[in-house]
Image 1 (cartoon, protein in one colour):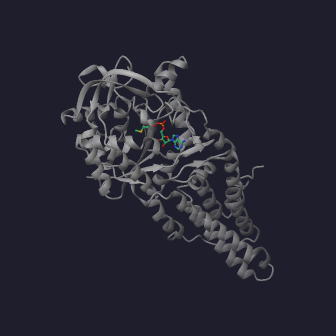
Image 2 (cartoon, rainbow, N blue to C red):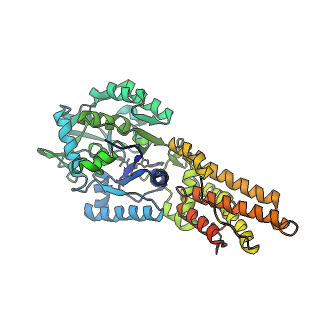
Image 3 (cartoon, rainbow, N blue to C red):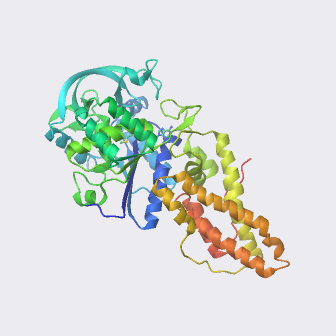
Length: 478
Ligand code: ME8
């Protein structure tokens, strides 16, 4: 039985067919903020991310690169981990679905449970398949014959596959979502999935012929078939924490508190996944959080469309905390947001270079120049108390706004109290004001920890050691 104060959060697992773009690091950063917040609260926290490796597009890309699939994957997965390191992503595990020890036992056990429940059957099938989505699609999913996410014409496939009786679970999944036992946030996405359930679910293909998909996990007792990508991929959320191999770990963390996903994969998470779990007799996750999409040139930023912004370039140019800041504050958590190089630079200059960076320099310069003495009093941090309620509801934008409003107030306080002037006429007042500023700046630093860990540590260290920064925390960009 999962204990209270245990927090398990997951990102989608990413297709390692190309480098990650801003859209991919987005959910990872959101999860990292939440994981850091829960760890700081003292919760037993587990943060999972990883790669979804049994996709046909991975195999195709490896072929194109003239490499074996394994060799190709070592390269892309290695670069995912390097990027997450460069962004201070504090994941506890990076699961790879090709991992035969960690992932495969769970995938096989899940398959066997679905079979035991009578929910797997074999049938011939012909349908349209979008490789970008790694899913069979229907005419109504298409715009002018093309997938609206990937702008590609789906392939017509004719195969014998194993099917999962998803249709049997339509009403059951609907009940779980309507009753709030399985929360889907925000409400607009809950309405979207309920509308889909109202139209009814069709059974789905859960395997492909091994000849066409040899790289995937073999179906138990039928080597001619391998598991189809979603049936295998969704299981990562439980295999990673021990399903099929470590019951104690599984009991500690399951059910997940948050599966964080983009709206493009809502139906897989809010229809397929609960149905599979119910069929296998496993409790459902608590909440599915659906974040907005990052748009570039008005379209979803996507590897397949090629309209991507490379997060590594932004990190090199502006620093990792600037990217974390932008994601937390300037991308709407639940709605779609457009990102441009100009909007990024403007936000950076206004709020980091001229905002928090400038405030730190001004306050610490006064502390050092006027030799102000103080002891930082550690007590309840009002900013953290205030933003907790927001973070508990995944309102990341509102939470970080609280800190930046405070930064604005401290700037205004310097403008009105002018300690750099009163130091000549009323030393006591100037000293009191600067001590107040240092104390508040420390609180800002502490509150920033989940959002901007490096900046948080720098601010607290400068205030405690009474030093000015050697160079501005955020250099202004021309
Ligand atoms: O779908 N804006 O992997 P994936 C915001 N392997 N988020 C975006 C985005 C954008 N433009 N583009 C991608 C898969 N994302 C499957 C998932 S989970 C069991 C399997 C984010 O590499 C978004 O969260 O295509 C999306 O759901 C995730 O990247 C999928 O990335």
